Length: 131
Length: 128
Image (cartoon, rainbow over all chains, first blue to last red; front, side):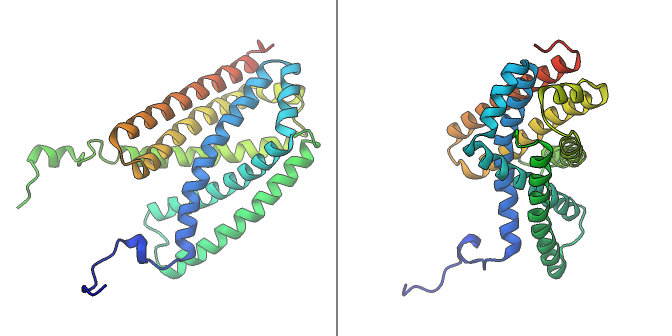
C-alpha cells in the first residue's frame, strides 16, 4: 500500500455501534417475519380445515424444531414491532441526536427481549402446552 | 440551473419513477400493523387456549374475523414492500432480481388468498 490513501466504502471502515446493529436486526427480523407469515397462514388454513386437520397442524407446530422457530418468531415480532415504532419516530424527524438515538436503542433492545419472554410464556401458558 | 425537465420537477417522481409512494405505503402499513399486531397478541393471550373450538369461536365473531382479514392482507402487503427493498439492495443482477421479486409477490399473494379464504370460511361457519 505505497499509494496514498484512497477513500473507502462506508461499510469497510464505519465503526461498529449498537445503533447500526439495531438497524440491521430490523431488516433481518423483517425477513424472518415474512417467513413467519406462512406459518400464520398454515395455522389459519388448518383451523378452517376442521378439528382433525387442526389437531395434526398443532402437533407439527408443537414439535421441537417448530417450537424453536416459533420462539424466534415471537422475538422477531416483538423486536420488529418496538423498533418499528422507533423508526416511525425517526421518520417524523424525532430522536436523531446521538444521545437520544443510543438511549432509544438501549430501551428498545431491552424491552424487546423482555416483551418476547413475556409473550412466549404467557402464550405457552394460555395455549396449555398445545403449541 | 437544473437539468431536470419542468414536467419531471412537477411530477416529483424522481429516478425510481414512483416518487415516495413505496416508502410512504411501507410506513402507513406499519402503523396499521402496530395496532393489528397488538390485537393479535392480546387475543391469543386472552383466548385461554388454541383448541379448534376456541379458535373457531374467536374468528367466528364478526369483529375478530374482520381484524384477522386486515392482519393477513396488511402483513402480506407490508412484507411485499419490505422484501422488495431487501432484494433490490442485495440482488445486483437485473434478471435474477426481477425473477426473485416476482416469485416473492406470487408466494405472498397466494399465501394471503389462502389466509383470507381460511378466515372467511371460519367466519361464515362453512369451515369443515
